[in-house]
Length: 297
Image (cartoon, rainbow, N blue to C red; front, side, top):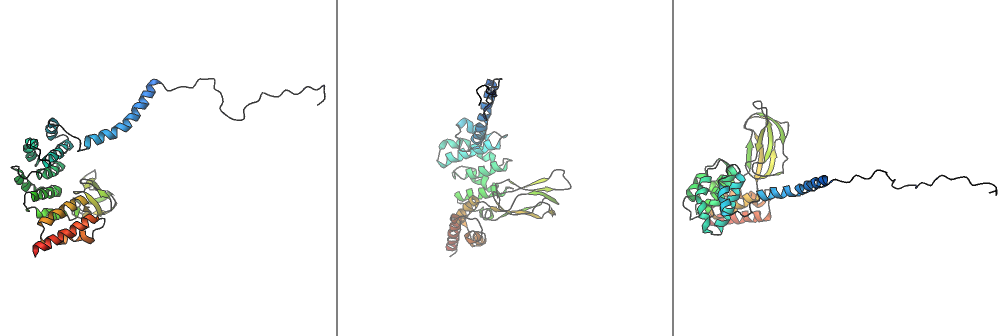
């Protein structure tokens, strides 16, 4: 460069990349916003716990709570919770449980099916209680197959096999028919596990603006169901529900004691033919058949 030349003035250097400075200060979260954010997060965690806590039957109830729950007709699950707790006390021969025996007899005719079902099981925990045997015999005529079945199972503890036909029925699938003619507008999938009272399908009829809900009378698994869009006549089979494992297990154990040769056609499928059956159930079915054959000889 010649000596008399002055260098050209270069522009101020700028960073090639990176954050730019802002003359305005960053806005931080206010105290109120922080509290709301924290409260929302806490509720997300707390709500499932509260739901579990209020529906878990293992939660201990005091004597006063048991009495209150047994008379809480607005919340049937409270009644069930109390019944389960009383049944546990009875199984441990707690003499204090006898103070609620009149309530157990009263609840045998409760309008809620789940309450009657649990009550039938609980009354089988004490075969010395006056009135329980007669109440269970009457429950064999209940409109619910689950209540009839539980009553029959409890009667076995009394040495009474009057409910044997109801026990055999526990091994058979439930067939659900259409209460009226109409069109299936929604349906669950075959193979789906379902609880008692679970929704199987919806039926649209001409008589009602709202679809009829078709629900399962037993817990188990959907074997077959009429699919969406099908038109059905009144009385047509809509679904078949295979009974749940626990139901089958209890029925097989009872028939081990009181089963007859005429019950074998309902038992034998669980030895080899019914899918998704545990090895324990298959083994129990085999042992039950052997016991029945032995008594017949």
